[in-house]
Image: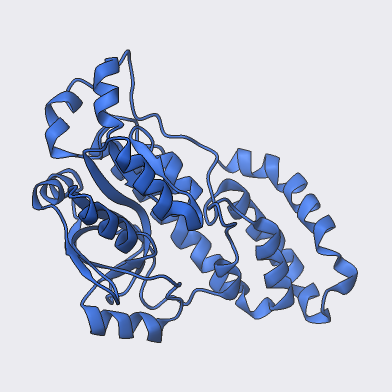
Length: 300
């Protein structure tokens, strides 16, 4: 991975630098430029923003009818790299259109819905890379209990996973006081921006639902402004926006670099876990079918 970082780093930095109009940068930004050059490889490799690798979920010569069954499971994600890792099932990752896309896919025929990806930590002492399987999804609007059989299959497949409530939020929960307040109010130990929507739609259609998420930013970690600009509406990376934000507000760089390291840990855990969950993300009705497939490789 390091070799690939070095290969993409010069051209990526050059393109972004050309787009930033350096003549308009504040003087305070110039001391930060060497650190920005260190951060770009993280962004290019997808540690914080995205990932160009696609996990191979099925190996060998799979039975076509089995794949059709697996595709009847829908995974809802928020980020492009989460969608790529989730592969093997039908994946919905459509930004602001996620709800409409999920409803349309369900109407074409579906057996279950799962929210899959990364999340922000709310409970103290939970580290980056920690798996959480939802017992319930709570939001300001409603609460949904997850499917117990599916959740149990996830817990058996993911060593060390915690079974607890996940909060859903329509807006980012970015700083420790806000995270602490949400934890105290709901009892949830992590938060994401897709699970509550997916749970609501699955319940409306009478489908089993669960969620499994990996912590990226722990409860004590502050999300800097650049991190909130890091994605385009479709979940793909916006490296130029991140670097522009850092150069306009250099003081956020340490927080951003810590987040990049946390994201690397979380992404690796997400990949390892995906390999353990099988082609249908541990959907209980398909466990016998999944046994016919070799486990996917856990990419580091």
